Image (tube, rainbow, N blue to C red; front, side, top):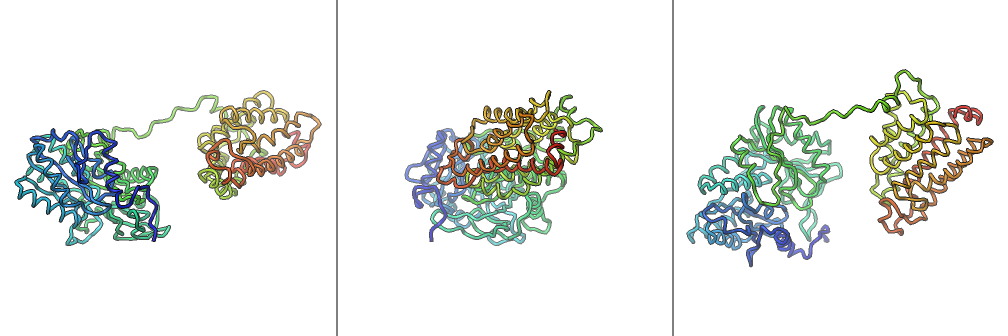
Length: 590
């Protein structure tokens, strides 16, 4: 059975290629010839100090080679994907650091049977050769509430042990003292992971399956399933469940977290989670811990110990004091260590928000108190909003063929913002003020290029309505808005954008300059032309926007922006018809 797609040269050689790639990109690293081992390039600087060697299976990048450097690891030994490294390579690494003058070697090993066995065998052989070697086995997993015979699994917290041990070694601390210190640190630490998807070893199928509405709690870093499967919920709720599990007083693997405790928090991407989601989780974790009276000394957010492409996150909590914090804050040349600011996150004196400057008097004047709302414009805007909300899924479907699939969502966001505004503030009476207010609203709330383009259009149109707002002026204002969109957006009619609809309508609306014209008839024809132009975009090759990067053979549907613009024009027409009725009434209202 074919496995998941992977960007590798060969399945068998991917671990070697990955380690060689890391070394090729980092001049502070070097390979140990004949072995899957990466060492500090300045290995001579380990003379007289304790060398630190870690490692394990590949697939956890940037662990472990990313943590090789002054102030962290001396070397790492990599195995095949999710497989313990060879005893011979571990022994070769020990010999290399001893030859460089290390006064002792500490093996930092995650608590997995294969790693314990292979590093342990290498340790015993090295001791026979006279090398002073010790081993620390890290188990920081909080998933299991009952103590397992195999002990707690080694997870992302191991990276913190790398950093603490590296700082102690750099300071000249002896082997036995480092072992005692990091052993105590490991006992004050816990990690728990959650995943939205499994991962797959190159050449193999995913290790487990999750339904679209499920997530896995308490899983390891080798693709194995977790201890509990649960339904999807909000990031905030997931974080609460994780922290509750990690600090459950009845759990044998809990972190003994009490109000007033000071902690380091690590929010670790298990490989495939977007950084948007990672930031949401990190913020939720900070808020949840602070609400429990926990002082957060540092937060590390990023990819530290991954499981290939697994879309998940782990949280690590480490109880710290000032001495331990200083070790974590110490300098290192390891390329993958993320060094946050050396200040407390939970600092009551730190303002997380700055008060925005007040609006200018001119902007505030757009919302005069006590001014009656325009009933006609309210009806029109209500109609535009309901139209855009009803088209959300259709526009998203059209956009998936040519963009990122969010055109409908973007327009719906604008519609909801306008609805909230209509309920909160009276509509400015003057058309220029109305368009300016709408422009500001869309720029603030709609987002994306659509928000900017509509904002440009409305801002430019508003300027031409400041002095004259009769029917003819509306045609001139529309031309001005289109000119602004073309000038700053870089598109033109025929480029398969919303301009195709708007320009088709604008050409018809120029008839409004004739005082004998029937405004509703002109507007009706303009809407028809806009809709025809939107439909015609299915036969155009995109020359602007995201769609311009997609082959024309794949663009078989109308442009979503053009469809949306035509729909807005129709909503305006229908809103005016419903509110004003006859052409004469329209003439007087305008």
